[in-house]
Length: 256
Ligand code: ATP
Ligand code: MG
Image (cartoon, rainbow, N blue to C red; front, side, top):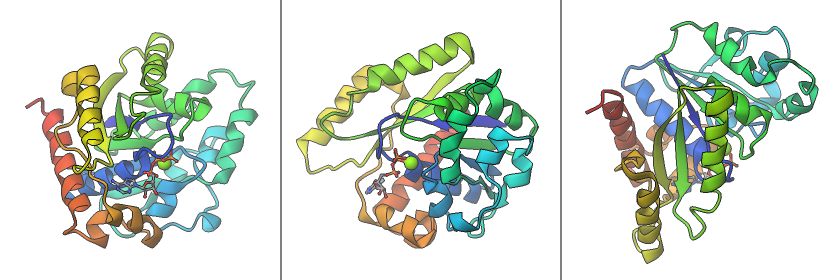
């Protein structure tokens, strides 16, 4: 079992889109995958077709009471082998509620440990912030996957991102590694995208995935249908790229 945290404190860079689509292609390959939605926005939850108003127990209860992950995990209705620990707006309150709790940074880690080896991969979708929820996710993870949007300010905030990872490594999770960097919303028609790619490669070197994710309108449409791209339009460029990204992810696990 490997736990991967999808992290970038910048908003709207493709964390959730990567989470949903990478997980679903890994599940399609036969791996048993769990996505934990650590974002009060609950975009992974709704993007997989769950109605947030109908969720009685969520990651919020896992973090703030003795409810276990097993109690809240649901089978994704549309993809086999794919499971979700859902989130709702309530999760935003966890930060304040747990202020005085001892070991509050490692609650998620302890709850994941209870799952033993039930899943091949666990992916944690982080909110765009550096608070308690993100720190819990980074503390619980074996590695961090960083989506970076191909835009003018792409590297802005990367210093802070690396600092956060270093801090967590020093104090809470010594073995935390960088899994990889994924360039998202790439537009081949602009020089800017190409410049961003080379800048990011200069910084992260071989950690940068060969597969980049293009800007693709179908990827933006599918969450409103509650479907991953492979079920919404499996022939589009976005689907092809996420499928290849899953292949590259698996190849990198084997170290080839
Ligand atoms: P947040 O920080 O708010 O959680 P995020 O990093 O999870 O955001 P997403 O929600 O995945 O980012 O993406 C932001 C928006 O861009 C969404 O509306 C999504 O549908 C759209 N989007 C993501 N990836 C692509 C893409 N490759 N092409 C086109 N649109 C995309
Ligand atoms: Mg998100």
